[in-house]
Image (tube, rainbow, N blue to C red; front, side, top):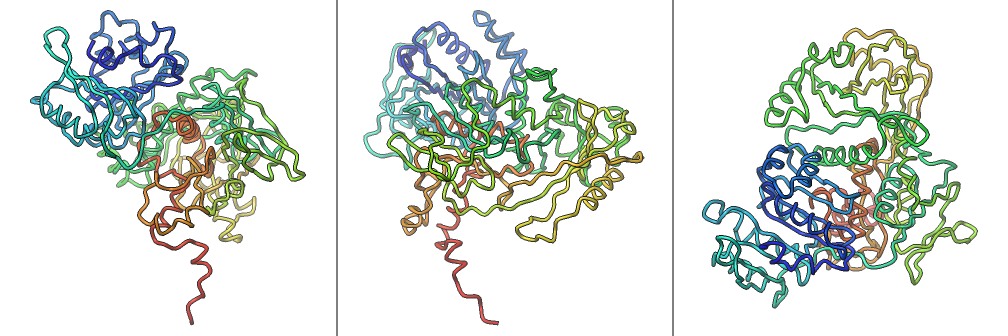
Length: 617
C-alpha cells in the first residue's frame, strides 16, 4: 500500500518503454518482490523495469527466503542470484532481462550522489529517524531529488516534520495520506520544484527508432551489439576485416579475474564490476560450448602470485574483511593442490576465476538475430542525416544508416569520431607450449605473466607488453626474443618448471589510451567545446557538448575479457537513459571526454601546446 499505492503504481508505468524505481533500504527485499509481482501481473507493464536499491548491510540469501511467505517463489529466484556482499553496484536480471535489480551496497550518504539514473518513483524505506537518522538527512534526500525525473513521485511511511521539510526544500510537493496497518498516516510526494534546484537533469528515457550502427567487430563492438540487441535494437556491425575478432580480440584463451588493490582503487573497482558483468554474459553461453560445440569458457579458479612475500602479506591482511568466496590468501604450499604444480610464491586464490576464449566469445556475442554483420567493409566517413548518421565507403556508396553510431574500431575510432585522443600501440605476444610437460596443471597461475592450460588441452604462457611502437619503434622484440622472454617466465611462476618446447605464437596489437583505461561513453564535440573554451574552464562532464547519437567504446588494451561486457552495458544504458551499472566516478574515469575536460580546465589544447616554439637552448 505505502510504496506501490503511494506512487500510483501500477497505473503510472503503463504504456512506458521503461520505468525506474529508486529505493533506500533493501532489507528483506519485500518492496522489490511486491513490485516485481505487480509488474508480472500487469498486462500494461513497461517493457523494462529498473529497480535500484541502496543498502549498507545486506542480508544473507537464505534470510531473503526465510523472511518471505506470499512472495516465496520470487524470493527463491532472487536468492539464487544474490551477490557477495562486496561494495559497489551489483546488477541482477530477471525475466529475460526485463526486470533489472541494481543493488548499491554501501553507505547511502556516500553512494547516493554516485548513482547516475533518472527515477520515476522513489521508495524511502529506512528505519525510523530516531534509530537511523543518517537515512533521513537533508543531504541524502536532496541527492535522491537530484535523481528524480520531472513529475517523479515518492512515498514513505515516515511522516516526521523534519523529513517533510527536507523533501519540500529538495523540490517535492508533499502531502499526508491515510496510512496502512498500525501507521495512521503515510507521506506521498511529487517532484515539482518551483525554481531550478539542480545544475543538470537526470537521464531521460530514449525516444526514437531503435537502430544502431557499430564500427568494429572485436570484443568491444560485439559487447555493445549484444547489449543493444537484447534490448530489441536492430544493429548493423561493420568490420573492415574478413572475420569477427580480427584484431587482438582473436586471443585464443585468456584469464578472467578481478584486480585487487589494498586501497580499492578505480581499477580494482572497475575490474570487479567488469568481471561480474562478464560472468553474467558468459553464463548465457552453455559451459560445454557454443552452438558449434566449441568451448567458450571454463571455471577453473586462478592463483595470482604476489611480487614478493611482503606484498603477499599485505594482500592477506587487506583481504580479511572480504568474503572468502571472493578471494583467499594462500601460500605456495597450499596452492599447489589447486594448481597441480608448485607455484614459485604466495598469493591470492580467485575461486571464480575462468579461462575464456576471446575469439569464440566474440562470435557468440554477435550471434543474436537482431545483429547484422558486414565483414570486409571499411567505413571511410560518417555524416549526419535527418534521421541520424550515414556511414559511407571510400567510393561514396552507403554502408549503413542509423540514429545511433558507436565507434568500437580501436585505432581508427578517433578518426571516425573526430577526436584528438592519443592512442598507443602495445604489442603483446603469447607463446604456445607443447602440452605434455604440463599435463598436471589444473588451474592457471598469474603474476609475472601467466601460464594456462586451456579446455582444449593447449598450454600458453605470456604475455609480452612491448614498448609502444609509436613511441619507441626500437622497443619491439623479434619473435625469437619474445618467445625467450615468455619461456623465461616459467621459472618465475613455477618452483620447479618443466622443460618447455615452444610450438607457436599468438601476436596481437593492443590499443591503449594514455591512462590505460578504455574510452567508453558519449563522444564529445571537440570543435564546439574549444569554441566555448572560456565558458567551459570550470565545466563538469555534463556541461560538455556531445555529438548527438554518437558513442565511443575502444582502447580496452589488455582488459578486453574483463571490461567488454561491462562497457557494452554501460553504452546501452547511456543510450537508453537507463541507470548506469557503475558509479559516477567510475563512469567519469572511462568518459571519452576526460582528456578534453582536463585541457579545457587548463585553457590549453594539445594542438596549441604543440604549436608553441621550443625553449631556447
